[in-house]
Amino acid sequence: MEAFDPAAVTERIAQLRREHRALDESIHRLAANPDDDLEAKRLKRRKLQIKDCIAKLENLLIPDEPA
Image 1 (tube, rainbow, N blue to C red):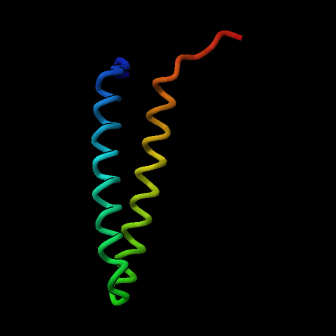
Image 2: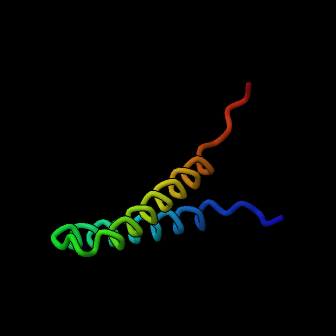
């Protein structure tokens, strides 16, 4: 099992946020062209996956509170 590295998790979150923003821009451009509806749906699905992954990684950074 790998040791937990908060710096690596933070860097991965930053990478995912950049990818999320890039997808958002791509989706916005595709919105002007209804012929690319399938591609827009694919990008939106990927964007949601990235959002979920970011949330999971952010939860790793929250320390557990003793009961």
